[in-house]
Image (cartoon, rainbow, N blue to C red):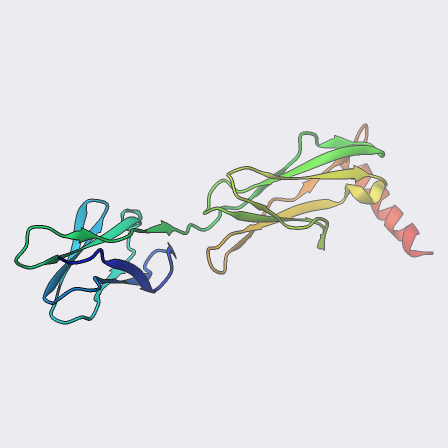
Length: 211
């Protein structure tokens, strides 16, 4: 009788992107050739390899659609037998690029001495997703990695007019070479229109640089 074969990944990763090639090996040890190896995705046959020696069966897959990810197993059996043994399983997951994150707050108006919150959320993309918050070009928080589909939130204290500047966040995940930036968000000083606040903020910056 053949032993339970071992299914291994020899090329690629279990987290895959579209058009990626992966190679699996399946081998029953000990076993006397010839052994027939069959690769299954769930209960559906994908490919058959007839081994004539003690070398592992190699199966190369191309991830061309979402239906190609999921759980795979292989089965080893002698050609002249009706039984067989199944391997361990390997599960592929599809990496998806993130969508543009949305930066928001429960309030768009604030006053000096007030605590406010900012939320950054990317609706689509493979988890986990990492977020980073900025005021202008300056990073204002440690990166926050979310394992669940929920927004990253930071708490801010409005201490002076300079805290009414432009805020943004960025998001990225394991999908290679993709980073997305959010919309810009500005708090408005309660009781003051945005144009007047901008003038006061710029004047405050100029005054600050004089010292």
